[in-house]
Image 1 (cartoon, rainbow, N blue to C red):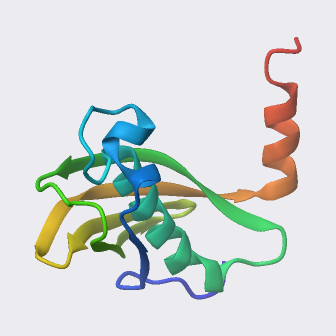
Image 2 (cartoon, helix red, strand yellow; image 1 turned 30 degrees about the vertical axis):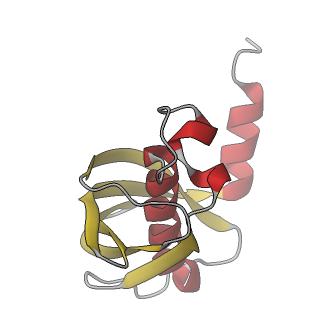
Length: 131
């Protein structure tokens, strides 16, 4: 990994459409931004922070999330997530993640990712359950 450091950040954004609501994804019955989508957006922001630092054949996988979803966002509103590296321990990277909509903060927490060798990871995953 090239010169990764605490403080590096990334961002991801989207507009809440019906397919991104709790009702659509099955995490509730309401037509508001679904928590699974907020989580995915937070992970995407973390991936965006790391992407410029990967070496050839390298990627990362999410291993832990501890978040709260604190406010409902209606369809049609823009939402975004920000992820900032707070800790680096060899291949383990910890992020502070925060999500917002046009009215303010909607969620916060921490997210952990591990740097991986893509080919080795895929090979190991493909063998899972075959022995």
